[in-house]
Length: 163
Image 1 (cartoon, rainbow, N blue to C red):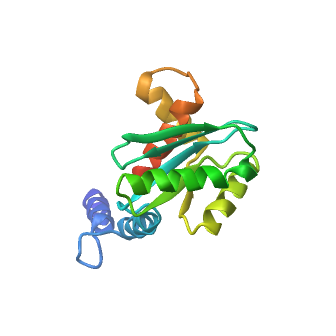
Image 2: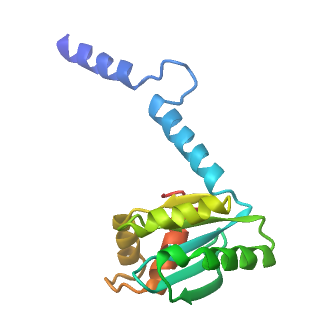
Image 3: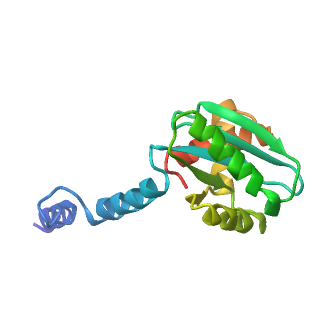
């Protein structure tokens, strides 16, 4: 008798109360994904930036992670406005209506990039460094870190809404 009570209790906990078949966790996740999709619309190219002290790798990709343009900027983060303008021009040349800027939130540089993106009305997102590291390992089974590879990984994770 007690066992059947436990089973029915477990069953009750798995039923969704609103009858839609969508749980509260599903609704919360869907809401989060909708907010991210507003920042990373399919009409925007993705600008992945691997930030460093004096050398910034910038890559422009589409939503299939196809690299549209790549360039190294030898400057500090607060001088990346030129890079964002260059990336927007590259994306426009490929038919995109805008760009979404993505980088890792390491050090103080990402805040500067966020401000530069905001000044240009460009959506800005961050990808966790740990996620980039895991993606690097799963992609080619190595620990090799290169600026070029990381910029593309940051863009790819952004298109997957893992930001």
